[in-house]
Amino acid sequence: MIGDGRSTIKELVDEVNKDPRRGYGHENVLTMITINELTKTIIASKGYTEGSIIPPGEKLILKDTANLSTGGTAEDVTDIVHPANVSMAERISKIIDLDICGIDIMTSDISQPLSDTGGAVLEVNAGPGFRMHLAPTKGLPRNVAAPVVDKLFPKQGDTGRIPIIAITGTNGKTTTSRLIAHMGKMHGYRVGYTTSDGVYIQNRLLMKGDCTGPTSAEFVLRDPTVNFAVLECARGGLLRSGLAFSHCDVGIVTNVTADHLGLKGINTLEQLAKVKAVIPETVMPSGYAILNADDDLVYDMRKNIVSKLALFSMDEHNPRIKAMQRKGGITSIYENGYVTLCRGEWKMRIMKADKIPLTFGGRATFMIQNILPAIIAADVQGISIEDMKAALETFIPSASQTPGRLNLFQFQNFQILLDFAHNPAGMRALQKFTDNIEATHKVGIIAGIGDRREEDNNEMGKIIAQMCDEVIIRQDKNLRGKTETELINMINAGIKSHDPNKKTTIIPSEKEAIMHAVRSAKKGSLIVLCSDVIPEALDLVTKLKEQELSGEVTFGQ
Image 1: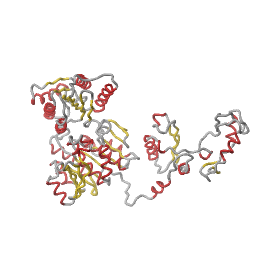
Image 2: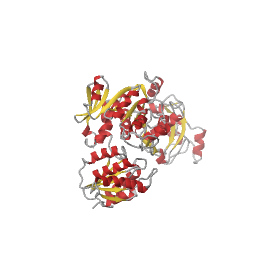
Image 3: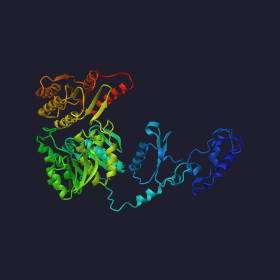
């Protein structure tokens, strides 16, 4: 209470208790404040009795708790609770295995994460009260009883299973995984997903690194808050440890091209395709295997599936697509500039490709290909076309949403394009994109990769030489069984096979290679940075960009 200089403590309490919302026990939305022995002890410690008059403006504590049951008040703060705190509360309730609970939190600011404010969880109540939410003293009432009733009576046909979307392929699987996860979030799912960048639970990065194996998938599937799982499944994890699930609802194969051949007994494309075919073969009969109709090896995977089949293609006239449409099947195609979903021969145009940020105005055709299986996966999981459109419009190629996938940074005098291209097919796709970027001079930064064949490294050197006017050969952070000299020589041999006179500089350190390119960049030039350790490269480029924006320095010539 706050003194007014006229009324006694008892008179002030009596005035508050005149509020018609106050009653005894739980008979009303608020409880009467009583001056019991505890209260007398507290005010006596300050030198007062219930007959004392408190000076104007002085605050006096009457209770050692703020519970409604002791006369406290409740303020609804639902709209300002930080998402991290919401996520934490959901995880706590599921970890303790309570469908309904009340979590007591102490913090200085509920709109900030508890980790930032130094707040704490005090206790978890298995039988929480509803009245503070149904009729708060201040703020909007919340009908918290409705979800409880809904929990008691699940929707008809609800199996309780988490939908699992599994994605594999040589290129494009990370972007496809992230896009499907984004569509799921737009639909209202609580999404957990794995990528080569890390594990994300409800858009929060909880595990960093290459997380495309079964351990990471288990992390998502065991999380009690997740109700929609999107799992990137790479060759390495499949060969080492298999899968973290026995069946999935949707299995996607983006493509199969030469990558990691010569490792773990996988020496041919046909053998690699057999490994990746595990994903569509684990789709349950009621689910969908979504296959690339433009890739012979991927299309052949249909022969061993037990599920339904859906196809996607960059060519609407692909005979395989036409045949599927005549049968009434689900397909997605790129036609007349549109990303289109088809049921049978009926077309449902989702969006014009050049209006989708991920495609960079339609110039990044390989990104269009990544979108095609994503819209089928969304459709068969009941995500509406409106939610798909909203997701495509808000999925912006950037360091936050698509780290290392066509991250374009505009500096004052030049541009830097950061990409994870790490095999000949990925480099060809990158070349096709950069051919559409106007630049006075193009500089490529590339490294040989230790777990690729010599011919693969040679080919990547040849492609970067075709793509750029000048090449800087750096050293990969992980040599993966080869020496620094061997890898540099492989890339250099590829460069010289295309142009013996191509300007080539060898700078082993990636940081020093980037700094050299930035300092010597010509006005209007493009620096193409192919990196394997995306977080470190992103951090450096971002810091350089911040330095330029702050006026500390201007890079380039």
